[in-house]
Length: 124
Image 1 (cartoon, rainbow, N blue to C red):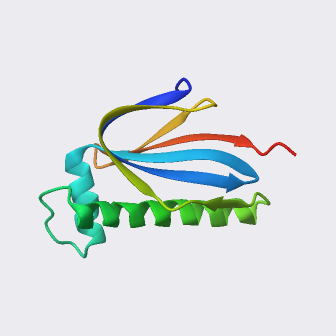
Image 2 (tube, rainbow, N blue to C red; image 1 turned 90 degrees about the vertical axis):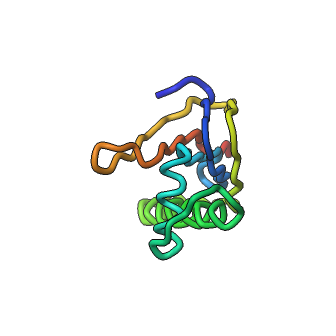
């Protein structure tokens, strides 16, 4: 768990969350892993730079992760919608109104990406 925000280096995809829960999700990648994941999303091709096509592939990856999460939450009685993903590149800090939970995703002893979640229940 982190304070109310997170530091990023490389590329992050920001997705807003609305509905029964409100907040943000950030999926962050170091550049090497961003290129690797984008290459897989683009049919296994070699990707050498963070261009518009690469960022679009990573946005679609984020849609897949969060769309599936929204379905699983709906099955448990929590309805959420997600906003279109927005890529953010460089070194930056994001502040959030609630505590941020960081979940590293590791494959073969390499961190593939971090998922940072900052949500709160909707106030009635």
